Length: 290
Image (cartoon, rainbow, N blue to C red; front, side, top):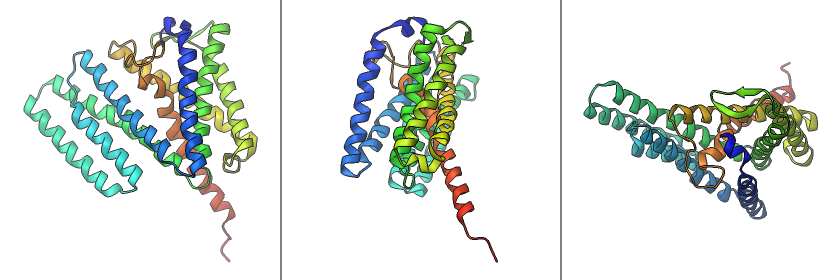
């Protein structure tokens, strides 16, 4: 985020409207006892964000194999949503071979290697991490609350960091990467994420998975910090590719990648953390031998 973006009042309005859309999708799923709308949202946002990565790379003079990258993203999402990992893995293997063949046609030079690396980076950074949200939504017993809770913890933490940084920010967090971010803003975001995690845990099945409101607070802090790191990572990518925004879909906010950058780190961490907690609870409740 640039300093001009941080001061743009339109980002607050656009952010609220987009948040209402996402909340409406999740409420609709809840009312029907389904998950297709939420997974459809993932299936739209993730490839769009990946396309933005390749567009930024193209604008910086690179030539990533974007069609193959998007096809790989499709394999990951279809495999996750359908639950058929073997065909998806086969598709990824075929696409990897195709990318190597395409690179060989361009010739063994430094630019081709960088193009191939950027293609793989996009798949790993956006497609693989984003597809884990499918697994998060389908976690036993807590999938719905974990999915919503992770989004709330992360995005409300983003808002907390924004307002705390505007009002209290003095010391820059990473001036070469994102000049608008401050240590005070990061602390404010962590506090809001902690409060949000405690509230979600108190009001939903997520509480049983994380150990009540106190565990929810810890969940919020950890996931919120991961979200802030995700935001900084995208800023680093944009700086390296000399791009101000990933795209210009939303006034004052940028593109889809600018919207979900924090979630790309927060979602997978929330998923693996909840899986680990479930395993630990299962081991603790298992009868001892003898």
